[in-house]
Length: 212
Image 1 (cartoon, one colour):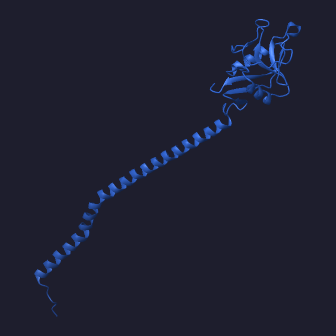
Image 2 (cartoon, rainbow, N blue to C red; image 1 turned 60 degrees about the horizontal axis):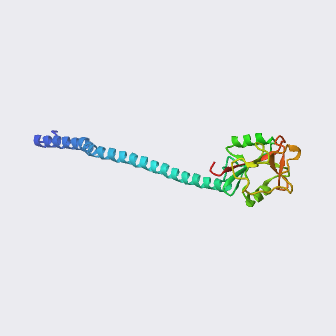
Image 3 (cartoon, rainbow, N blue to C red; image 1 turned 120 degrees about the vertical axis):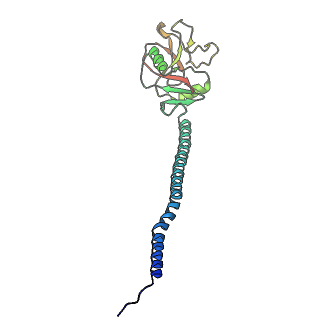
């Protein structure tokens, strides 16, 4: 039996259709993808830039918060320790800082120790300061910055304050230069002043301005 013959024109049309479908499936999607590649790259780059900016802003924000916290902590320490958090052995009163030693030394050595601390043996200027010192001292005498070792009978404060017009708080009958050997002043247990030998070993009080 003879099979049905397909006309030549129909065969050619089928081949063209097949080629068209092949071209459509193979090339058209690639062309569409090619159009989206640059846009994808741009979007990805912008994402990285935005992330970097976000991280930078977060770091800056944490820095500001930490700085404010540090500043508040510093203010808190200053309120607790006006003379410095690292100098807690110093006591604050009326714009000055006071150091109360526990080591007993002679008067001249006491002054040297105060100078090493950028201060001087205390100069007592008024009754309020006197009362403060009395509230802080232990039951033993302290060296203060007053002496007449350079000129007997001519008492001088170590910072040059005029003794004649300055505050005084001597024990009754003092200074008396007992045995002609009492040239330095001490703050006694009662808070009154007394002249004693400069070579006696005692604890001492240093004083410096708050800003030192």
